Length: 505
Image 1 (cartoon, rainbow, N blue to C red):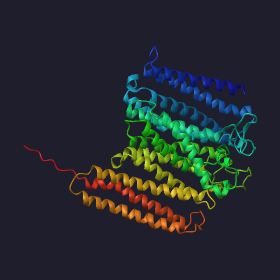
Image 2 (cartoon, helix red, strand yellow):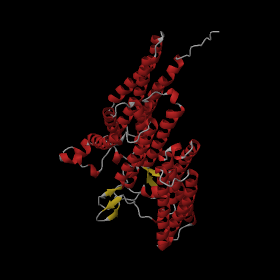
Image 3 (spheres, rainbow, N blue to C red):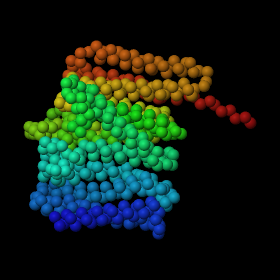
Image 4 (cartoon, rainbow, N blue to C red):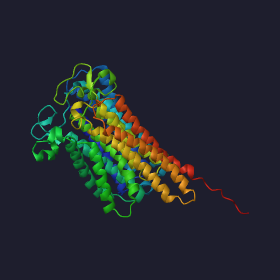
């Protein structure tokens, strides 16, 4: 215990002193510290913090009289060193890159680019190292894991029958939202040279998204959960019951409307391309709330299919939400983890692949509509894996239909976005021919949508919500529509042939 406390104090002191030096540098306090000298000091601080944090992890075994196995001790030592090093490096790189002030503070453009590269490499490795570290202690923790703090009972788990006053679910959602706000604020600063542009939008869109998530949940589960109950039960949001599809849609609509009303002089299309894809990050973080609540998980699966997962995830996924332990070698499919990874990948694809590498092929607004398609596809693939107890609606098709609507709606929006911008900007005499060629793609796509919609509308939905031939057909239909509408991105460049320039002697 003494060793743990001493190491913890030293770690807190080192990290705090590093933050103090960094903030003083950013504020340019007197006497000013050269950037190179600051970096040398931070290297020493990172080393002290890393060793202190690793010592804390090892001392837990001694404190609890635990005799770990060889691989557990290795995970604790190596994981502790990696978490301490990568975590502190990520923190200081993030602050200096996003808030350091650039060349006006003595940070050269080359140094700033290196800090960004370090951040992009260190932060993902930091997250992976956390999983590695937890394997050293996973078998010595009580399951199911705690999901919050009660002011009267301390740490509580989902099976204790006590609602936490501070729920980890809420902290996950709030943490994701706050991170996304600062990320978007920085991107707006790069575009307009000003912080705080999104402050009022965030304060309005975030609660609107929560209310929308609750509204969609109540509508989708009305016959199952709310019909015949007291009217105020629909407003008891603290008892759980949110649907991310509804929350995302409501938050986007309200946020865009508020931004247009309150922020004159800013490009709304650029704004939504910056903001909307980052929602994927907020959802990736927020989904961990389902993990702590052992809810919204997938169907039963063999552990052999998920052996590569961190042990603490596997151990928690062996419980039903009632606290019943599954049979040996069986776990629930960790939908929260699948969606977390998929959403993070989606943000990278939208923001860095289409937003940068392929930007010349896209129009403003495409990244926002791309979010709708990506998240719709994510849920479309995940719904058949969901445990039946967490299906929306009496037959489990509520989320399925909305996921398909997201894919189709987002695809149509991209197509219309390109078509409208093409018609508005094109001025040559061949406009009619090009309109016909572009519109033909829309006709094919709309035909597929109508045929698919009629087939679904006339179906009794008797098919089981699994990856059978019927549901694979729906997925392929949605992908086909997305691909066809995506052709509109490449059509205009084919028509826009550069005119030859004839030099006059």
